[in-house]
Length: 407
Length: 80
Image 1 (tube, rainbow over the protein chains, first blue to last red):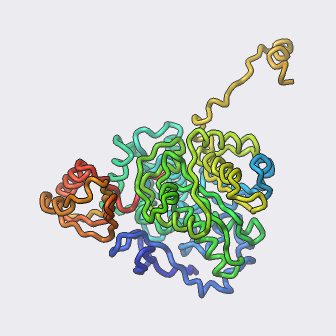
Image 2: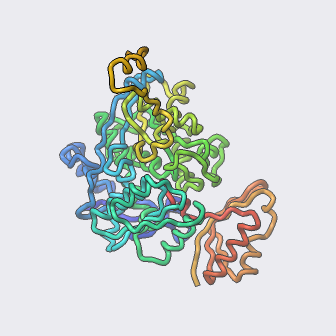
Image 3: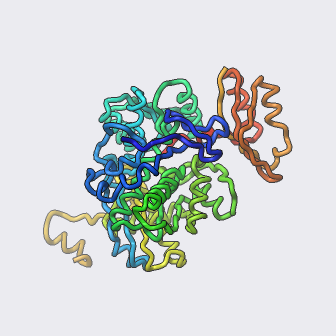
């Protein structure tokens, strides 16, 4: 049985039935899924979660779905005590939530699994998304599993490696000749015309909820406690808000103590509208033109920016932006201390962690969790300069001559 | 007739211009403002435009040509 109750406007509180809609008819603000928490009390327990599958679906009671789920094996990813990196940064209790190991190599499998499950419940035959990489792959993979048709829209400058990453699952892949904004506008129009489940439009309230499992898992893996500090990257800001919601729900259900986690939001300097609003004390997130190598968070007009901003402020956390050079250094540092090859967005998280630790904003004894949300191999061109091999002839003399100071 | 929800972001130099009024008058569009915040230095307006599709498209192109940033109200649809 699902505990899902209604959709509610995040701005004006207007309520709507559970349908494929994402905007309040009155104020055009985003809608969010509301649950019957009263009915959950006593029914939703630590023991029940522990007895569930080793995937994000062990938390099904807190997700907006009814029956069978579309699961390709997402979630319950490792939470690693990062002692080497911690030593480097002067942090004694540093953990990495390694979401690079999801089936399509990013955390996007969590929200997409929830959204595609809901799309099938609504009776959609086709699902669609616009993406520059991770989302496209995840949507195509889940559509394959669900035996649904997938339409994936990508801008014309998308790298071929990313196209393969989506095309392998057999979606209808549409390359749009035009700018980033042109793709946005086209998809907004298509979403109105066609009866598709558009992942981040009419399915967005359900898509969003899948990201709550990022919080649930960390809490359970830490032995049922919330971290002191969380660092998470923000593109649209949606998953950042849902981590906070996940912690809040666990506290509300009495599964953990009241949450005092400081939430730190991470952006790339070339696409940092939320960080700019945080630093200027603004109540509005002004759109920017995104320009960064961290493509997964290169969102100039973040749909949930204002809500992410609010959480960073209210949790006494912060917002940090780092340059592309710092991002690359962050990718290398994580790989060379903890053996995790992250995409550029993960490098942004590590670079921000370094800054915040050096400034003393994050204290060395605070239990800190840094979320690494996507794997590096799909965008390995950003760190291709690491390849500096020793070239030897196939004999011992040559080997010892060339590598004399390495042996 | 169709409806399109958009967000306009105005730079300082355009704050005093009646752009939304002119948009409605010149392109036969009905603008319906739902949320807004306008100060002396910057302004944004979330609104629904109702009219013929070609009129709305031409109207939006005109607003952009005036220097206003126009975004889908759902934020960026493309994600990483």
